[in-house]
Image (cartoon, rainbow, N blue to C red; front, side, top):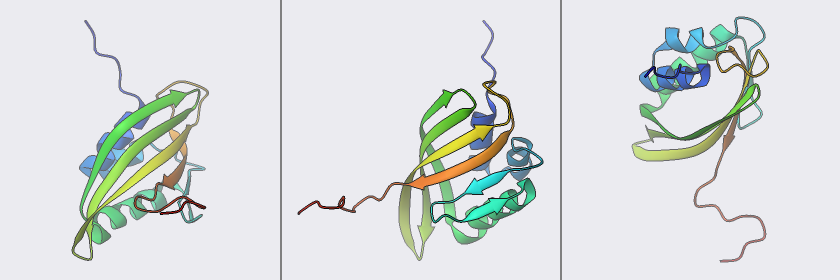
Length: 132
């Protein structure tokens, strides 16, 4: 029995968790990559995005780890629910997130990533209009 091939999103996540920056770069489109962050911050370009990830996960967030909860593929888009864990100001922190990836082609799981959008969940926050 042959193993199914791993898709580009899964390779990206594996390389990001291992802080394998060349591996991360190999999953990203050379031209036109856009990363939209949770604060509406935008990073354009593969090299700029990899440099950002490297800086954040190795210099600013001590002990950075990923826990993948679910990966869903729909056409050329993939949704990933994950939790990033790290130490910030001496405190262990967990950030539940949803990432939206868009791939260059229309449906093949191995198309290079052309867009990344990051959405945070806010644990401990009450929804608008909620009463305690």
